[in-house]
Image (tube, rainbow, N blue to C red; front, side, top):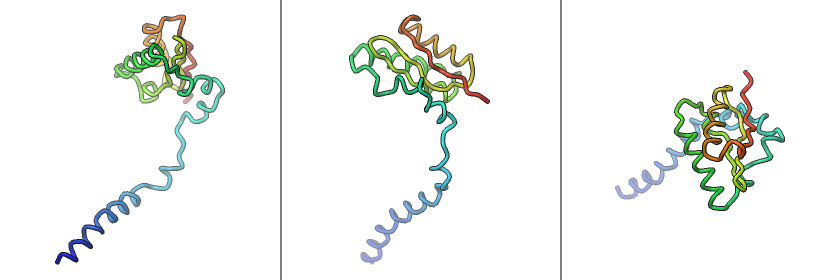
Length: 128
């Protein structure tokens, strides 16, 4: 009885892993996000996460803007996932949004926190 129980206990994790792998379709891993082409543009590579300032002020500034954008429930997933990078007090917004209104809303949040003259808006509206 103990021998059967041990075999069963060893087989259950293997079966669960096999089931999880079987449920994932091969296309899940090959399909690219809608904004892949836009992310490859030079303007979207200028300010990336590795450009983020490590000083307390830059980290705090980015966090406050991110929090403000995330609290805006009317934004799409695209809007909630824009890149926000602060370096020496200047904030750069990169990414793709669904509409001009969404772009304006995100810019307004960044400008209200960092100051209008400190925001570089490289957001692009998704082409249909």
